[in-house]
Image 1 (cartoon, rainbow, N blue to C red):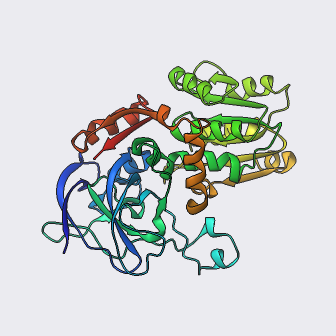
Image 2 (cartoon, rainbow, N blue to C red):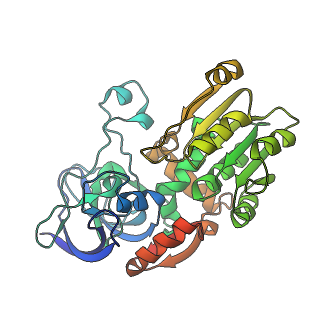
Length: 361
C-alpha cells in the first residue's frame, strides 16, 4: 500500500521548487522504507533544480539525509525497523567489473530502489542521486541505508551522506594525505571544510585554506586550517608557495571545480605533488592544460568520486569521530529549515551565506 508523504519537487528546469504530496511505494526485495528526519541542502540538489544534472524532470530532490528505517522488504539482512541510518548515493553492486576487482568504491552499477515514488496523479519522479530525501518518507536500496550510532543528531549525521564524505575522502582516500604533508584546499564550503578536517586528522603539517569569503576562511580555521588565503585580494598560487617555502604543496584539493581553481591547484603543487578535484564542474566547462607543466612537475591529477568512499565502512567511522569530538559536524549546520523553506535556502546556498542549511522533517 503506497504511503502518502510531503516532498520537495523540481517540476521543471529553473522553476521554484514545490512541496507536493507524493506516493511512496512499499519496499520490494532488497529495499527499505526510511522515515527521513533531516536532509542537507547540497549544491547537487541546486544542479538538479536548474537542469545542470540532466533533464529527467520532475525531480524528487534531497540526498544528504539521516532517518529511521520504517519497513524492509525481503532480503534486507542486517536492517530492521527502528534502525538509525545515513543514506548513501553509492551502494556497491558487488558484481560489476570494479567490484569484482576489489574496488567497490568505484562501483559502476550502484544499487537504487526499483520502486518509483510518484505524484498523486501517477507521474513518476526521478530521485536526486537515487535517493530523493526532501520527503517525509523515501524508498532506497538496502545498501544505501547505512546503520550508524543513534547518538548523533540527525541534522549532523545526515551531512556524512554526501558533502562531508566527499571532502574527507578527497583528502584521506584520494589524496592519501599523510603525516607531515602540506595541503592546500581551494573552496571552503562544506566539502572543502571536510577536506581540511580530513587532512588535519590524517596528520598534515600545514593545511592552507583558500577562498574568496572571509567568513568561510574563519570556519576553515575551526576545522584545522593552519593558514588562510583570501584569493579575492591575494594571488593564491604565490601565497601558497610562500607559505610552503617556495615549493608548493604535497596535496592540493580543488573543492570548487572551475577552470580557474583547477589551474590554480595545478600550479600550487610541489614536484610530484597530487591534485585532487572533488568540486563538481558545470557540464559545459573546459580547461586547457599546459601539458609540459603537467609532465615536468610529475605527480598525479585525480578526480575524487564521493571521496572514493565505501559507505558501509566509512560512514560509521565519521560518525564515531564526530561523537568523540574530533569532527564537529554540528558546526557545519548554519541553519535548520522546513520543507517549505527550501527555495529560499537554495538562494542562501548560492550566495555563500551558509555552510549547510538542513531541512528538518
